Length: 133
View 1 (tube, rainbow, N blue to C red):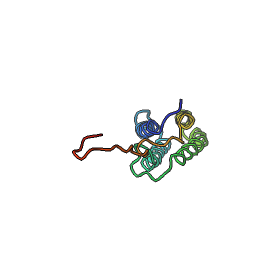
View 2 (cartoon, one colour):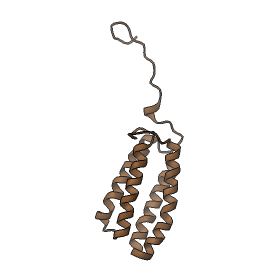
View 3 (tube, rainbow, N blue to C red):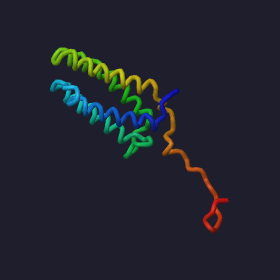
View 4 (cartoon, rainbow, N blue to C red):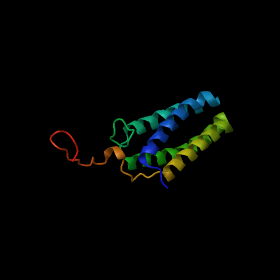
């Protein structure tokens, strides 16, 4: 079973919330914390601009959203190795964990699913007094 666009949108906002809270909750080192905040900002911008149920501006196609998420997950791998050299294993493991979460979301999501909010509204006839026929 694939994750539909509505559920994916909710997961996107939860991911943003997590990566913004994680530096304080987990005590991430300085560079890792800054990168986590930056990742949250990028993912929030992507989420707000995606054409799905909880997107607010809706100019990024859902398939493009999926491509950006895959690219972000791939980019996080060398970032994790870099953080290992300057801030240690905990920072590395945090970013490896984010990579796995984003990759799982990407693998399990249906990026071909047409969002419910963009489906056509069914035509319903009504009588002249406002009641349905």
